[in-house]
Length: 282
Ligand code: ATR
Image (cartoon, rainbow, N blue to C red; front, side, top):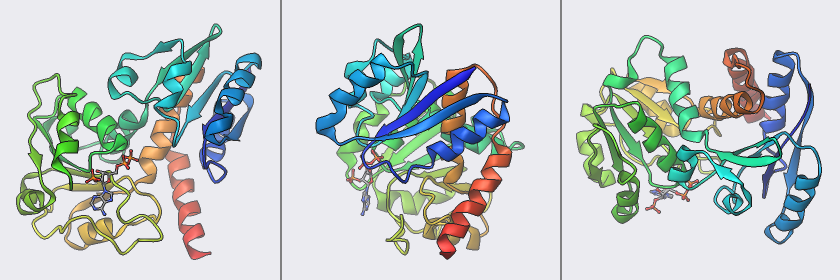
């Protein structure tokens, strides 16, 4: 099989996706290429027409097209439809089918990093209420956790996300200040905003003064490799989970959709960690 994959976005030229997917192609003994289609918005319709005429097997969609791409699809996976955003398109028998693997990628990164901890028994807190929070909220709810609370600077924005709950999971909406006070009750904390992202790496969205030492504190920001929040969590004796895992596992899930082959992502996770740390030293 000779695959043709790619990623659509703007900007996208520094995307790590070609590196990740080329590794997955090689791992499973497949031939293929993965191209970056960096396209400004006014050229998107042209790019879509071009992709419809060539034999593309699938592509990723990144900022700012995760919602816009829906207009060009033939079908939408129910999870992507609920989230209202697509990060993976599979071209199957000529049909464009949209998926979203971001939130599920996060959940898989937690399970792989902490195989002895049972995620389904955890009380979770999501920090932030953007697109990433939306996907992670729904993915955690689908795991039937006892509770998944959400805190955000703007409370109103969080309300819409809690409506994605269709299970036994309980949810409360909190301000950042309320979350700081109640932090000790959570087993899993996930920071989903861009606060702390390079070059503003000294920023931290909330204080971890009350964090439980048994808790897992995770940040989906992977630049810097270890954010201020994670350094703080480590210093307070909590478990930490770096953001590069979500990136690798959302890609692994996309690759599995495209090829129907299983991906072992652990080796790549380690390589990616070294690459990110190396870039920080440059
Ligand atoms: P994405 O879709 O990539 O997740 P987004 O939609 O821009 O990103 O959402 C950004 C999130 O980061 C929001 O939760 C935002 O809080 P508000 O809803 O109050 O705007 C949060 N955020 C961004 N900058 C922040 C800051 N300096 N302090 C606190 N929260 C911040």
